[in-house]
Amino acid sequence: MKYFIFIFSLFIATSAVQAQEIAFSKIDKSPLDVVIHRDNNNQAIARVIYSRPAKRDRKIFGELVKYGEVWRTGANEATEIDFFYDVTINGNLVKAGAYSIYTIPGEEEWTFILNSQTNQWGTKHDPSKDILKVTMDSMPSPQTIEEFSISFVEDPDGLILFMGWDNTLVNLPIQVAQL
Image (cartoon, rainbow, N blue to C red; front, top):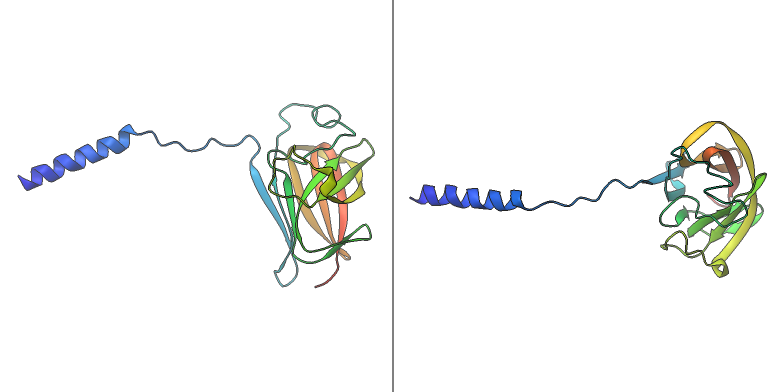
């Protein structure tokens, strides 16, 4: 009899779990990604956390992302960059810390904006918190870039931050102020 009660209880418990629908979040159309640049000793120098929207047969720059307007530089939450050491960008010292990245795309060049406010939705740019605005070179990409992408490339003077999407690449040299 105890065996029967045990089996019956197990059946009821299993049925109750199966009857409940487990709700997992759906795959985001602009998934989150992280890129990290490390030194020769594997110490992190900089990290970018961002969402990667897809082109999906759309014209991106000049239409979806307007020229001359502040762009969240990705999708969803504001793109965040963490510097683990003080850096210099275009001759401007930037202290180690976390910042948001915004950009103003243009046909020939872009404006890179470093903002002290983090953890906000990407369209909530507060210009009073901008700590740095510099221009970035823009160039055509040799091939179409389907998903917005950010990468670091090693440079003799530090690193270069690359951003690309659709048929456009931009880059920003960054020098490490201390190591």
